[in-house]
Image (cartoon, rainbow, N blue to C red; front, side):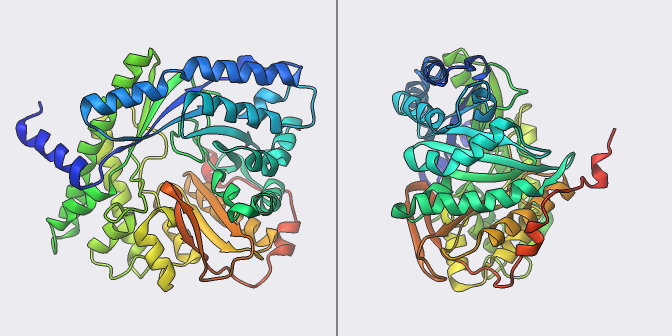
Length: 452
């Protein structure tokens, strides 16, 4: 039962601690939009998205106004486009991205995800066509996000796909070099991708999902940071309990919004993703939470342990608050979107190697990292392979969203604005991984895959 104290605490979280609903994401199945004629397929894609999501933005704004809860983004995710487009008699998949983009503009959403392919065990014809279209698709569109799943604990790692995605990322950076390679900020390479992720750029509507669902992603690094200021010097048991209680409150608010949106839109409620998603705003940083635990700078020794505690406590608090927790759920560490991470990277304490270690215990992976423009495709592929191995062996989702900024050198800044923030260009190792990537084939699934 809510009491006056609970209500006042929530109001303070919203007004002073950056608490918000990061996104209401409508997942839409496009499997019935398949058609041999590409033009007709694109028309069906556009029409269905617009029909299903026509009231999504208005509903989010109404809830925001009536409940006083900030809802930052309204988004759409769709069936991986490689599956929808595969029946079409065409070699060019860019028009499907354009149809998605047009629908996103018509509906007024911030992003649309699902220009995606799942190739953890091999490629279909449609997968190859979609992956080849990614650079041009992201160059021609404004709101489309793309993702490719190249590995899983059950399947191992498709190293041919890893090699190809290194080349695709380089091509995407080149194709959007007039925007500092911004297309790469809308492209994620996954291992163990989940089907109900409401966060961009990796969201897609999985094949095991229903016709249409509402998924909500909450946030609240600022709220956790504020809570930890009240337990300075306390043992880690107290720290964990404090984070857990705070995550409970945040998730309850997310569940309220999710059920309200579901009811008003007449669409089933899917999940609440209780991830701590930072922004470039001061006071809304995961890095500052870790530093509040006693680290001088995020990235120094002890950072991985602090992040492990945070991630676990967030999950424990969230699952007590909602019976439908899903998505990624934990703590995000996107460098460009977290002012504390940016500061730590600029001073050199936070490196790509340390970030890779941190991804063993957090929600996703190497996220929103800018590297020099002359970084080779092989090096990018090797970074993807390392991160995929972390996910595969640990049975968790990992991802790489990396931006080789055309013309940039270590120490330069890539300015993206908005929630995407600004990324310091970080160094990569100079030694070559080319011969490793050139082997191709598949890294076999680990022993953990044999769970039946």
